[in-house]
Length: 467
Ligand code: TYD
Ligand code: MG
Image (tube, rainbow, N blue to C red):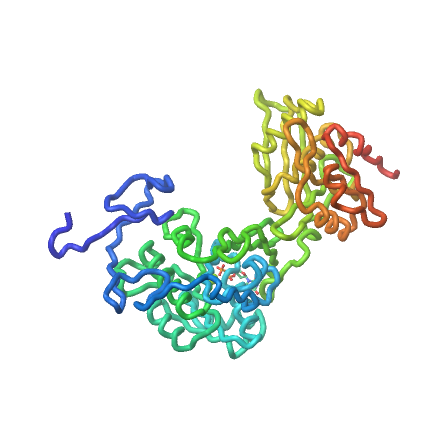
């Protein structure tokens, strides 16, 4: 019981932000163990005396018909990186709050500094607020990147209320808060980085962006342990959540939106860290296919849609006789259960039984397959690996495979064909039903297949040395 003079406290799950009066060993919402932390209760009152609520903060409000609202699509702010703008759904929506999450050192500050400079170069005012680095440290990073326009201003502070009053005065189009974990409000008693502080600071920024029209980026660190309040708590508050993550050993980084009130969440943006900042990789297909082995069994190229963009990637498969009672199956970049299903289809519908074989399937370049159109390529690499025959290197395959071994149509076949042809592929194997929608370009052979049994005849022998 809260005695007189004793501070009232509540418990928060530091993983998902679940709030409870009592301490609990396991969070009932996200099932994390040992994540509850005690924090003082925050009571906030707005100027009108009532508890402040998101998103409006004035006391005079009125309802309007939706037709009177200007959709004003054109007013999106360009980030200067096509890769970034596309992930945001076509640019930054004024007055939106965007969370950029990612591991420390991945390049969040660099990306936002470059973006801020790009926006400022087009004449809009941008304020970059850092709670992590000194102005000198920012200067060192800025010097690597290039010249910073005068419209881009910097300030180092961690008091969110002081920052908001500065922003209200300077009225920038865009601001960057790096990072939300370093910010605090004096009205909440807990330390910066705690669930209460992170949530409260984000809510204040949400109210500010909605009332001012200034768009704001919040940088958020994700910790593996989940002990520090991570962006999970924030995902519900902000408009857009973008993760910046590393794809593979080559140093490519992917931007992915996982929540977007103003666009689709399927888009990815590809970047590369160089000695002078991040560089956008406009043609991910080219690098995903770099160094691809030819004249080897168990490799195929497929074309997947990453949001609105077709991307070619390599699928690799390996089968070998098992040393165990239970054969091993391992996947990298594709769903494990999907592989099990495809192996069953292969055995029942094409007579290729891999029941005593270990099977490994890998998508190279750190990509993740989220649509079934890679099925046909997975089946093809398994057949290729099992029979030691090659899929000719100028071939691209895509199509969904059903339980009867039928090859089913996938959307946007013509976009996929176009991308494959652009990168020099000359033979496309696709679902028969997709042939109608996609006309064959010159010098390109299109083979429509209806059943996986037809694949074996399309493979060729491994060429001997000197042939
Ligand atoms: P940073 O943007 O500070 O990452 P985050 O804000 O996500 O913690 O930078 C990440 C790394 O990038 C850092 O180790 C230094 C490196 N880097 C470059 O390789 N080239 C550059 O031009 C810059 C600015 C940084
Ligand atoms: Mg940083």
